[in-house]
Structure formats: C-alpha cells, structure tokens
Picture 1 (cartoon, rainbow, N blue to C red):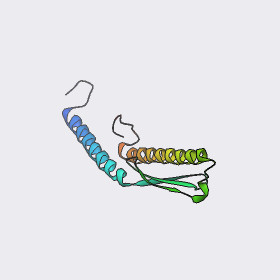
Picture 2 (spheres, rainbow, N blue to C red):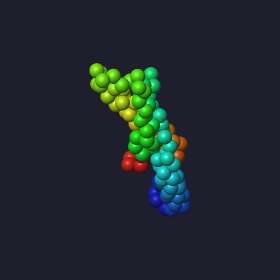
Picture 3 (tube, rainbow, N blue to C red):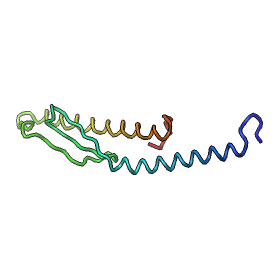
Picture 4 (cartoon, rainbow, N blue to C red):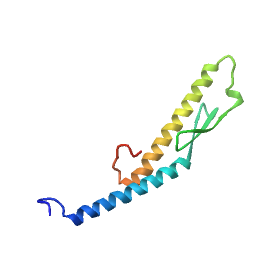
Length: 110
C-alpha cells in the first residue's frame, strides 16, 4: 500500500471508473455528431442547420433577404447565423459531456 495514498484496490476501482467514463464519452461523441442545431439571423431571414460535427446541413435564405444592392447585409446575416449555430453546437457538446464527466473539463476529449 502506498503511504498516505490509496491501495491497489482503490487504484483499480478508479481506473475502471475512468475507463467507463471514457467509453461513455466516446459513445456520446458519436451520438452528438448526429444531432443538429438551428440558428437564425435577421428575424429568420437566414436559417442555418448544423450537425454536431460542425458541418452545415442546410441553409435557407428568405427571398426578402436578397437585395442585389445590399449583398453585404446578406453576407453578414449568413455569417451571424453560422457562427451562432457553431456556438450552439459547442454549448450542446459541453452540456452533454458535462453530464458524463461530472462537470470536469478533460483536455482533448471534446
């Protein structure tokens, strides 16, 4: 037994817990890749759907948002909607992974 530390049984128990947590996290990562989030900009003039892998699944642009004299505004709306969707994916991932890790942030895992 280690002086002032945990014995071998305690270490093995902790290792099993860590392995179980890692397995649950990998399973959850696969599940999250299939989920989608939606974000809009400009009062729903632009709607973006992004999956958990941060790939844009769809982009819808309202005809009213298309103004040939103001292309910059449409570009800004698209960027805003995509960035918001990406932020939502990060928040979803952090929330779901936090359930598995008990709130601990594990570098490189998500």
